[in-house]
Image 1 (tube, rainbow, N blue to C red):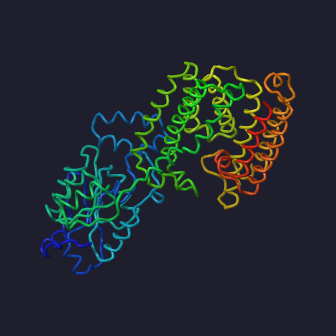
Image 2 (image 1 turned 45 degrees about the horizontal axis):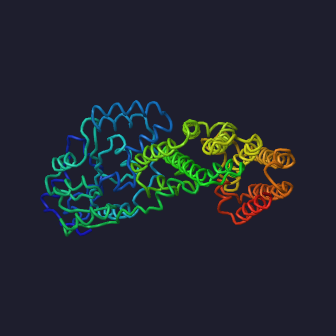
Length: 509
């Protein structure tokens, strides 16, 4: 970094002093003898949220509290009436954050390691609560001290600038930051390091301080937001169309109603997915594949997720209001059950499987309500067994993957690796029971009123036998994606099976 060095007298003064700031104590740690050129330079002060960490400790604290003690997280929000610093202190009281897998800025860490090796004095300054900032400093072990919020003073912007000037004097420190509030700190700094800032702020800082050093730039791709919303999971909501197809209602009004219902359920589901990912950050970051999810990896700011959750939910129920009131009620039930699943039911033995199956069933009933047709008992029974099988395959795939990678029993799930054989057997039994229900439906009197050649529908049973048998074997081989629905949407053989079923359905009309 090309920072302008301070005078020798100033550097000596800074090296030998221990300063009490309004926001915290800067504690000098024992140091080996350092090169003279390092002693001539002002200390480098580094911001935490968004700069050193591609996340935000306040949101991390809130999410961790929601995941373990939801009521405490909600009650903690009342501390906001005493100011933002009080809220941060309240949420930081009992929270246990795992710093190791967090999305740290590796480029900045490399730079800090190099500066430390030269003997440069390094400080961490953050608006996060002091207990968390000190824990981060201890985690890395190379910071000479910290500046942080203390429950009363929110160390951000002008408050941070004042604290640093009180400790080092105006122009007596270099500062690395990433947000527009850091402009007030850069005004008082000797050297400026713009880290992971957006393009607008980077241009503004470089124009104002041409000597500023730029390290990386914040680029959040639209596809990262799409991935966070798990748009690929919207394929599950195609179940809403099944009652319309089963009743042979293909007029324009019904198609529009189905489209509205599809979008309402999809936006609602995305809202819950975002909530689930924020609550499960610690587990996801330790997971082999889930650590790549946008919030866990830091590719989408967590604060954006907190904003998107209510926006998507409001849009969902706004669309639902265009349909019958009973549809709105079913959507509300779906949302409540999904939230309960994300917050705890998914960790209960077999309860998670039943709930997943129930959520699929609610989609079918909602689709029937959207177009005003009675729900077929045959379709209800078929879906119950089929989706129970898929839920069991999902759990089996997770256990098979852990077993193959020597990871042991999963944490946060009430399953053991030794449960895999029974889960696979239950998945097969439930899946082939669904095929049996399909066969009984085809041979019933009800089907002959709807189809000119109903016996052709037996061919769908053959396709289902092949498809279910194949995914069961793939699951046993540990070649199944952890989400069988996603696998079905992207797998070529599954796509061919779906096309064959559609052709058989059309040929039977």
